[in-house]
Image (cartoon, rainbow, N blue to C red):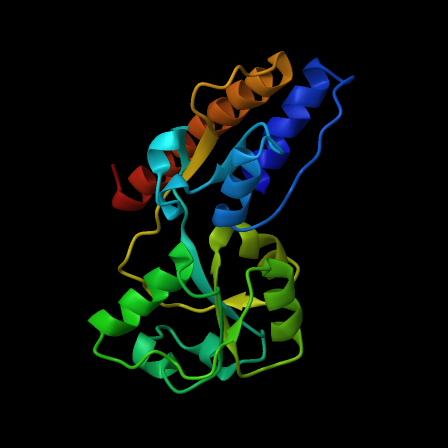
Length: 212
C-alpha cells in the first residue's frame, strides 16, 4: 500500500480529473478480475495462476516479512525468537496455497517442526491486526510494509525472528495484448518509478548496514 499510495498521489497531481478505483483482494482473485476486463492493471503475483503466460508482468517490489503480535506478548522482550518458540502457540495465517502461507509452511518444514494446528485463516491484514489487539498470545505473518504503520502506532509489535525463505516479489500485471488507456499507462509509469526509488533506498540502507 505505501508504494501504491505514493504512485496514485503522483498520478493525481498530474491528472486530477481521473476517477480511480482500488480493489484489494488476493492475487488469484485480482487476476480473475483482470481476465474479465474488470481491472486495467493489478499489483499481485501472476505465478499463482496456472497460465502466467497470459500476462505481461514486471517485478516492482521485493517484500520483506515479519512475525507480529500484541505488544504485551512476553516474546517481544526477548533479544531473539526462533520458530521453535512459536510452534505451540496460535497463529493467524493466510489461506492455503497463498504465497505467504506456502512460505510459512516451508519455514516450519525446513526447521523440522509441525505446522501449527488449527490456525485462523484470513487474507485481510486489518482482520489480523484487530485480532492481535485482543489476543496477547497469538502471532501472525505479515509484510513489513503492511505491519509498520501499526507497529509505529503501538498497536502491534514485530518479533525479533529471522525467516530464511524469500517472498516472491510483487509484479505489475496487465493482460497480454491489451491496449492500455493513457490513464493506465500513467499509473504504470508512476508505480514503476516509485518501485525503483524504493529499491534504491532499500539497497542504500543495506549497504550502510554492511558498513560499505
